Image (cartoon, helix red, strand yellow):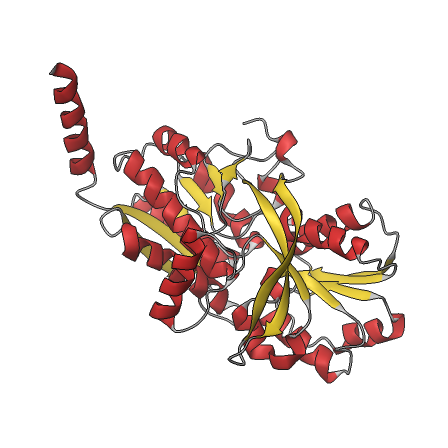
Length: 385
């Protein structure tokens, strides 16, 4: 009788704690040509909250304008004035590095739905920092390095923007393509972050005549690059490879037929066959009248992860309780199996997708194989906290 009474009291206390939703601060990129990335993450997260977290999360969203200094100011206001103890949303690694180290040291839980800089995965890992997406170099880029190597390419041209995620991307590609060396590379080029004109780079690619081109140019950068790649007459002549970020549905819709036939690596795909993903894709299409992107899937998973942890903690924002519940990852991921490694980054499967035109004429992605199973990022062993 006493145990039953205690259990009932605990349930009542948890219900009372959740009577007011917990404020979660979302700083993301909603403006500039890169704004659709943050918008998709937001849509995915809001769908998760609408489905099962209306009484759990009060999402407070602000646009960082793709500027680290803006994000820092917003984070200070959210944490110091508004008392927000849980944060998420950042798309770009340079923005994450300007915000995350400070907020997690000050007792805030930060769960990344996208950016995964290596500096926060290894020696610089923090107990209050979780990444629900991937680590920059390990996930998609390492997988593509292995895939391109297995395809037999001997002379690859690689390029990415000159910022933390771009450097991590090419480091990850090289790690599994040539052991981290320059062997087999036609060139390794770093472009300006936010660049729109790639005439110089395309002239160099034509002159180098490589077996393949691997590029990581997220958002508007990649759209411009691929359009110009086609206009330069390189499509169909030099095969293109990249991470899913360079071939999501918004991206390929903007580019059109020039995107067809390219290979990209991802931890998720709209045709991934599990119950949670089938339901997510159907719900997203019903709400937004289009296929979800990888960014939307990461926002959805991050939302469901936070909902599960906050519920299990009884609405308590105490970092120790939330850390314990987040680490359990007790939610149905659209990726299928999902678990955190010791550095609180996912251990997950990585697939290869191909862009194609479906029966309705829509250009999208389909799975063609798996590169890694239960893949652990390269920095996990360096994390001691």
